[in-house]
Image (tube, rainbow, N blue to C red):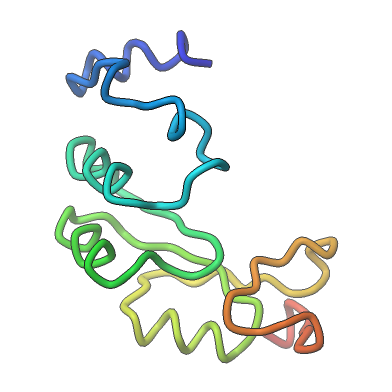
Length: 117
C-alpha cells in the first residue's frame, strides 16, 4: 500500500521519514499532533472522525485547515455533542451497524435504531 501512495507523497512533498511506523496504520494511533500536522500540509477537503472528535486544540486546527469535519453519532446525545463542537456533517449510526457502533458518550444499553436516530 505504501507504493500506491508514492505519487501522493511526491505531490505534497512528504517523505517516508515523515511518517513513522506507528502512524502508518491509521488503526494504531489516534488523531494526534503528528496526524494534525500532516493534515495541515495535505489540506484534505474532508476530515472524518470516529468515536467522537479530537481534543479541542487539534480540532480547531482541523477547522482552520478548511476541512469539512464529519463524525458518527450513535445516540441523540452524541449527535448534539458533535453539533455543539462544530461538526459539519453527522452520520447517524444505529445499532443495526452489526454491533460495531462507534459509541463515545453512551454505552451499549443506550442502543437506538438508525431511523429513530
